[in-house]
Length: 230
Image (tube, rainbow, N blue to C red; front, side):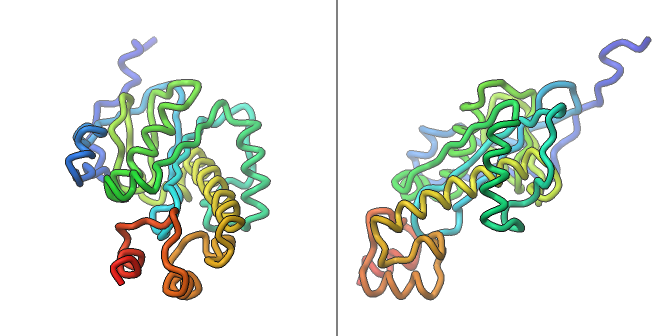
């Protein structure tokens, strides 16, 4: 019988992972310098990580981490953007019920404006992974950048359509943020957050020009900055 070491592949550089560049000095205090992480195939729990809300003009960026249970599969997992809202809601409940563990975290509007959206996204992802009840041996992150973690990590471009754990994370993050937008709509119905979810649509930009920015708008995003400067 081969020794345990013989089943482990030698480390190979992660081609798609790029170190996230530093923004402001404050980011350096919160986040250690990103670095490319070497990974190898090894037995153990694997977590998928994804985010929602990098592009909108308002609200937090939300990240989720999910460790699925191979003995309790979930049918229909896919990139959250390809699913209907009703389907996402149903899968959200199923993921919460069937996954070995899951965690949802965010970086606030204040953190986005202070750090920049990339570093805030990395921060939200770190919080999501640290919030898992079980510690994975490896983390698979959607995209081409990885946050600084104390476990092995690999970036996978379009991972939300390739890896079920990442698909599950994308659904949790998307549903959480959409629910937040619905609550924000109740407070500020004039902006239509329930429809555009904070993205810079014509409707949203028109409301910005007419009513100005609300407390949840990202001050460092150009369309909001322009309204504030005016």
